[in-house]
Amino acid sequence: MRVWAWVAAFCAAAFPAAAKDAARGAQLAAANCVACHGEAGVSRLAGVPSLAGQSAEFVTLQMILFREGLRQVPAMAGAAAGLQDNDIEDLAAFFAALPPGVPEDRGARNAALYAAGQAMSGPRNCGVCHMPDYRGQNQVPRLAGQREDYLVHALLEYRGGLRVGTDTSMSAVMHGVTDADIAALAHYLSQRD
Ligand code: HEC
Ligand code: HEC
Image (cartoon, rainbow, N blue to C red):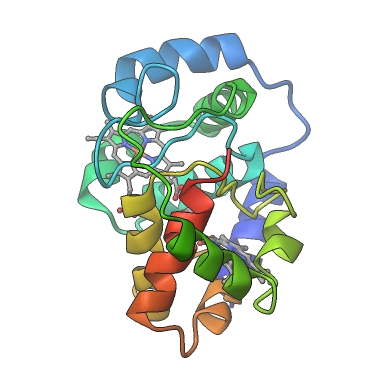
């Protein structure tokens, strides 16, 4: 079974339309997540993605992938282990409701690199799935203002077939994309607000 089908079936069973409690999510996050992901969900640490304003469905699905050991990241394995389904839903509701922000260490815009990334994004339909303003939707993550180093890391993993996601869209998208293309795309997206 494809991973996406598996996760969808899992979610249908595990997540009936129960009320999500963002206030409870805030308490869980304060104790377990914000040391790495930032007090307001905007990360100050290289390699750690911001979660503020991230799609709740994306956060929920990724937490299931981490918890079930399908997306294997040592830093996240401990954080996801032992979370109950309603914990994950409440955490996702909390992070999705936070206003998105850009990291305080974001570098200055390089006009040529930004333009190169923008030019690539159109033909490759990045904004069709991620939305034209890159706020994300459903299982497709928000990218606008994400840390540049994390975007490079994520795109390299997709290209190398190293990241298991909930569908295979990104492996197809990244086919034939060069390191220079990745640098341009990551710069462009990180500089969007
Ligand atoms: C020890 C530091 C650390 C802690 C604590 C931590 N995370 Fe993470 N988290 C990371 C790192 C590093 C990544 C990036 C994984 C990778 O390299 O692909 C990540 C990735 C994620 C992602 C995927 C986001 C994306 O854009 O791909 C989600 C969702 C997430 N964490 C949620 C949480 C939640 C919820 C908690 C608390 C229950 C938490 N994290 C605690 C370090 C941490
Ligand atoms: C067909 C729809 C589709 C297209 C087109 C698409 N994406 Fe994605 N993208 C997704 C989905 C779905 C995910 C989440 C996959 C997963 O579960 O790992 C994703 C994940 C990502 C991530 C990981 C973000 C994070 O926080 O972990 C990055 C970065 C990304 N896409 C960048 C791009 C770029 C750049 C383009 C254009 C070159 C693009 N995407 C085109 C659907 C798409």
